[in-house]
Image 1 (cartoon, rainbow, N blue to C red):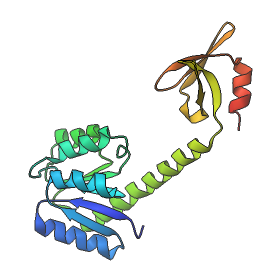
Image 2: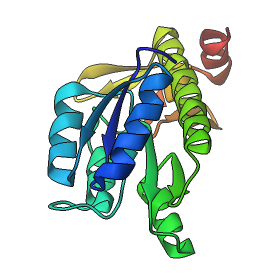
Image 3: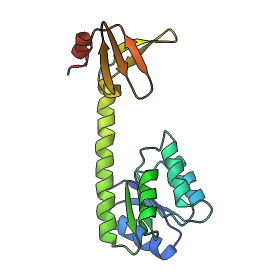
Length: 191
């Protein structure tokens, strides 16, 4: 886990100093900011490996920071651990709905925070590796759009549907009537 950069977004200096100290002892590089506006600037400039995000922040609150992170293609998979005094079930559900990877309430145990951070980073690294492997899968032509041949990998395909002599390939963005027969598609997609 060493040499990973964590952005700590916490407006309470005592808490920020304690968390930063514990993270550095674990070998993490830590950048600390004290408001949501600086958090977004730092996220898009430095691309941290993980963000620890308070919700009650000056300038831009943590909800808006989290929402902005999830809306941007370059940061939508950035791991975010919420660390906040907002303890209600509604707040927790809101955090997860907005895309928090984990949610820890104050007061908290530093050891529990470290364990959660390590778990989130481990999952994130696994998912990142899965995305890399998916990019390496062979791409097959499934049809044309605007006169341009469309290629997809197995990972891009949600499902395939055969209707009489036609085969339709469905992806998250679109669906295509392909010239390939179902058995040809299966052969091309087989590992």
